[in-house]
Image (cartoon, rainbow, N blue to C red):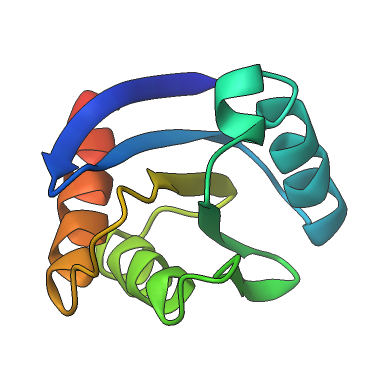
Length: 115
């Protein structure tokens, strides 16, 4: 599991990105469970994720509407299969509007560059 913390901060909201090898919905749920074992990630507002695997395109917004699809589209463009990417957000109290999608995209870009 690779974790990149505190990569983006905007109006009190903070973002991190994590990921690792993953080949199924069951493994994705286990990955999220393992991520939430870290107290900081368990207290996060959202852990949105996506995965391209033999089961197809899987995603979960975790309450951050549309975030899973943003991650999924980036994985499709990159051709990254059997690898989950999770963007974590700790809500800072102010609505970010459309900026939240730019932050999700930037988090995924940072992760992909670190691979």
